[in-house]
Image (tube, rainbow, N blue to C red; front, side, top):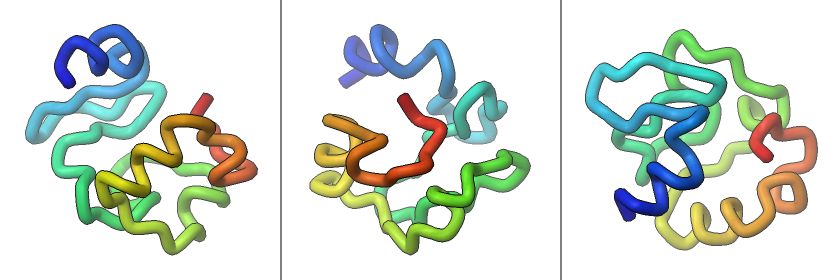
Length: 76
Protein backbone atom coordinates (compact mmCIF):
# COMPACT_ATOMS: atom_id res chain seq x y z
CA UNK A 1 0.00 0.00 0.00
CA UNK A 2 2.67 2.52 0.98
CA UNK A 3 4.69 1.83 -2.17
CA UNK A 4 1.60 2.30 -4.37
CA UNK A 5 0.68 5.49 -2.54
CA UNK A 6 4.15 6.96 -3.00
CA UNK A 7 4.20 5.99 -6.67
CA UNK A 8 0.69 7.02 -7.63
CA UNK A 9 -0.88 9.38 -5.11
CA UNK A 10 1.73 11.27 -3.09
CA UNK A 11 2.21 13.85 -5.84
CA UNK A 12 -1.31 15.18 -5.18
CA UNK A 13 -2.34 13.86 -1.73
CA UNK A 14 -1.09 13.57 1.83
CA UNK A 15 -2.20 10.73 4.09
CA UNK A 16 -1.14 11.75 7.58
CA UNK A 17 -3.45 12.81 10.39
CA UNK A 18 -3.80 16.58 10.14
CA UNK A 19 -1.85 16.62 6.86
CA UNK A 20 -2.36 19.49 4.46
CA UNK A 21 -4.50 19.29 1.37
CA UNK A 22 -2.57 19.51 -1.88
CA UNK A 23 -3.81 19.28 -5.44
CA UNK A 24 -6.05 16.59 -3.92
CA UNK A 25 -7.46 16.29 -0.41
CA UNK A 26 -5.70 14.68 2.54
CA UNK A 27 -6.62 10.99 2.50
CA UNK A 28 -6.08 10.14 6.17
CA UNK A 29 -9.16 8.23 7.38
CA UNK A 30 -10.75 8.00 3.93
CA UNK A 31 -12.31 4.56 4.49
CA UNK A 32 -15.97 4.95 5.50
CA UNK A 33 -15.86 8.72 4.94
CA UNK A 34 -18.34 10.34 2.54
CA UNK A 35 -16.86 11.75 -0.66
CA UNK A 36 -16.32 15.49 -0.77
CA UNK A 37 -16.05 16.07 2.98
CA UNK A 38 -12.44 17.04 3.79
CA UNK A 39 -12.54 20.46 5.39
CA UNK A 40 -10.67 23.15 3.50
CA UNK A 41 -10.57 21.33 0.16
CA UNK A 42 -12.60 22.54 -2.83
CA UNK A 43 -14.13 19.51 -4.49
CA UNK A 44 -15.65 19.14 -7.92
CA UNK A 45 -19.43 19.24 -7.90
CA UNK A 46 -19.35 15.55 -8.88
CA UNK A 47 -17.44 14.56 -5.74
CA UNK A 48 -19.22 16.94 -3.41
CA UNK A 49 -22.69 15.78 -4.45
CA UNK A 50 -22.06 12.10 -5.22
CA UNK A 51 -23.34 10.59 -1.99
CA UNK A 52 -20.53 8.02 -2.23
CA UNK A 53 -19.07 6.57 0.96
CA UNK A 54 -15.52 5.32 0.50
CA UNK A 55 -15.35 1.63 1.33
CA UNK A 56 -12.39 -0.50 0.24
CA UNK A 57 -14.54 -2.00 -2.51
CA UNK A 58 -15.76 1.38 -3.79
CA UNK A 59 -12.21 2.75 -3.73
CA UNK A 60 -11.00 -0.19 -5.83
CA UNK A 61 -13.58 0.55 -8.53
CA UNK A 62 -13.03 4.33 -8.36
CA UNK A 63 -9.25 4.08 -8.61
CA UNK A 64 -9.45 1.83 -11.67
CA UNK A 65 -11.10 4.65 -13.65
CA UNK A 66 -12.13 7.73 -11.63
CA UNK A 67 -13.74 9.59 -14.52
CA UNK A 68 -15.85 6.58 -15.53
CA UNK A 69 -16.96 5.93 -11.94
CA UNK A 70 -17.68 9.61 -11.21
CA UNK A 71 -18.03 11.76 -14.35
CA UNK A 72 -16.93 15.31 -13.55
CA UNK A 73 -14.37 14.40 -10.88
CA UNK A 74 -11.04 16.26 -10.90
CA UNK A 75 -9.23 13.00 -10.08
CA UNK A 76 -7.28 11.60 -12.99
